[in-house]
Length: 147
Image 1 (cartoon, helix red, strand yellow):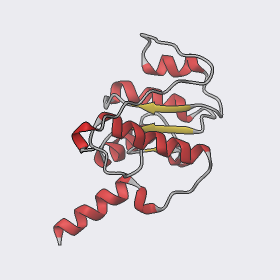
Image 2: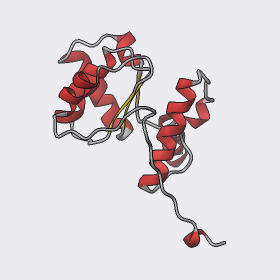
Image 3: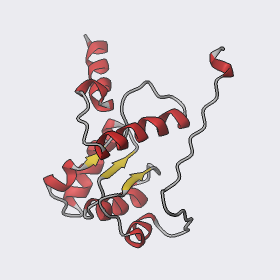
Image 4: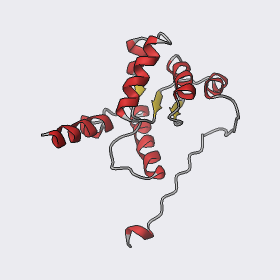
């Protein structure tokens, strides 16, 4: 079977319910009332939407809080959350960013699988090797290119 014949579809269904909302992300996080069984992932790449939702999520017992974005955006996001929203180092240490593990993802379904793999590893308390960190892999590649 050629690669072009292989399709990928990702469908995630919460164990008990599904819902759709038109609420702002931070309002949606507050309404969700995340507990230790909840994973929250910010996907918009828009600080006006993601930052408030992440701030709220990091102040809950959610077992996973992550955000899409580049390493540069992740650094800037952490600085904003600390400076403007008063999050501490322990809260920011819980933030997974860039979200996912390095598996060479290129398409949205592959990126979703990468993020789900990281969520599952956190849920199961599996410490992944540093080589699977997206930031680490990209940093190593940047250093290799600059040599």
